[in-house]
Image (cartoon, rainbow, N blue to C red):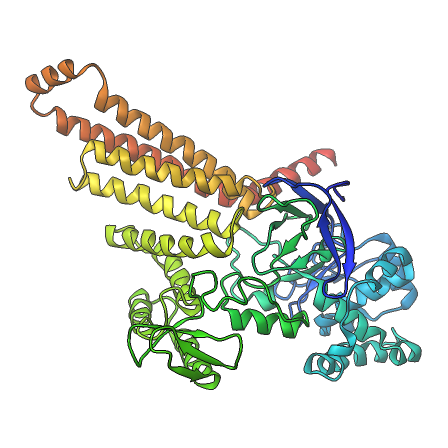
Length: 550
């Protein structure tokens, strides 16, 4: 659904067709809500259900009863992506379902080509999107599609000789590669994405694809469990300003981002971040100079070399690339479950790379996840907080405004802050006043997380995290109020008199605080468990309703 009057589409030679604000757009305002035109597997991705796009490689599948071609996860699949029109078109084309089952890379482009048969209006809109056909011709991705898509579609008689002559399949593959968004698959509560390039899906959204790129975007994208995409303004967007989305990974360094954009989107970015060797002061690509041991080695925009900001020593690209590749190799070779080993590796890499270098940040993110799984000892909690703080400092510069990464990091940090302050108070490292100060800081951190999470769709993992965070906030506020009430009840004279008459009052108060905090923390843990199981509960309820209806 287009939010009428909030943007319009214009065109120039540099950006092609792109969105521009039709009026001043406020922070958090919805710019666009859109259902997908297509959802499918990534290049080389897993075999998925035509109806709900679940991975069927392990669970098995059946063919649609009507067209005998579309792959369906089960007879009871509740998805709605395999339309009656698509089903009829597949019957008319007499496509062999086994060919799709054996070649998962076929399904996304094939379903796009089917639109030509049953939805010519949408088909014409798709053809207006940029394919970069000339830039792609005879490249590795062109040859890959020729073998894995074009050749097989010809063997099953899905395309004609005219289609081959007109390079129709290559054009469609180009449009899908350039304009699709990475979409998280539907998962069970315990599902974890370890290989996004394979596990994630691709979604084609005709209106959203018209957003131009900038490495400092002004939009926030979210996709719910039904694959509905919503675009919010992540900052205030003045009238006549382009509506930007960052096509790349915000925590990649300049060179990696530029390479990703050149190879996948076929343009060279020249935004404020890409033209700044310091990357807006984050030093995400900088290395420690081993010559002077004082300066930072940064990339130069005018030549294929790097220069130290202190001693002015220059370094060739090849040397820097080898250094980065060696760092990446060591990270890949490290045992991802060994916290001590990862910490030792981090210490060694910090002798070569800036603390904010993207390889270092990758290690730090891994460590946050590892410490989350370890027993909540004070040193583990302190380390989690420090790692989160470092990540937030970088995000404040490269992902301004509304941010999913900030929200998740803030939520993780508040949890560690609450647990740590409770343990420090228990061990008499904090008094009651200091405990309250720590908890108030944790509360402020959680509120900041919620401020971002509230823009997430309710039917999404982040939306469910938002509900859990709101419950945590309520519990934390109750804990703080209870402690303040116990500590400051009555006037000072009354408190002093009670203290004089009851020498153990401080210990009693401390015990009461610990009990109340323990009760509330247990409630929070229960909420987390409930949130993780909510999806299964909803499914059980849906099944019960259906049984009653039957």
